[in-house]
Length: 281
Image (cartoon, rainbow, N blue to C red; front, side):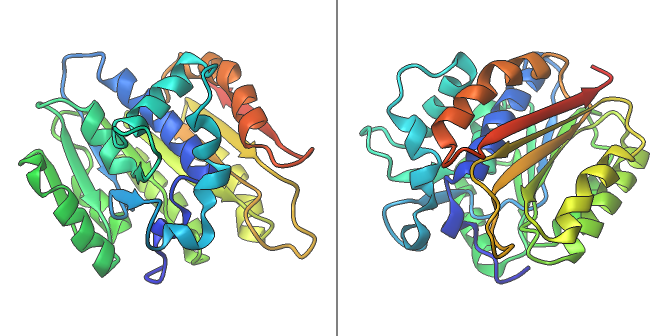
């Protein structure tokens, strides 16, 4: 949806879950010498100020990354993610939050490639500016990521992490993510696909997990984090999830170790919790 700007939500609980897992996936792919691609279908602006502009209006980071910022007792994997955010804030004050492209740039190597799509005209220009000095291994395209993804699969190295995280403000996104994954699995069945999705009370969101599990994937993992009870009026996001196809075999145990900490840190009431299910791992 062209009205959506992620800057309003930067660093919130959904970003924490998404980027914590993204860091683990990038670390895993980087263990082998063979190059890989990172493809982001909805890349946003790449970086977000938390102390100025849009992020200050909702200040959602206060119930997200802020709650992990000063904790000395984080599990190693969570501490790794927070440290990458700290590198963007060298004075120790949480003023900026990195988007998915920034994490990918930090954790990829000279032989790896980033392919970033952003349709919103303002954010795509910001993305271009923010990654102008990254060199030729990063390509930013001002286009619909769902459409652009088709042309990139399979990627030349036959290794890739594909992140799909639309705003889901448009009901059509629920259909498009299923179509994108179906097409992706036909073109590139061995790819590592990571879909972020919101926990909402609207029917499309309720039906999404079952549709994802019906995809022809032998290995998958579904994790969700609930931060508060569902609202009485039926509106608002009470959590979010990540659905992974061809995830690393080490991920289930790592999540079992870290998700209780996320619930304790990000939970806002007694309804906070997590779910984790997987197959083929």
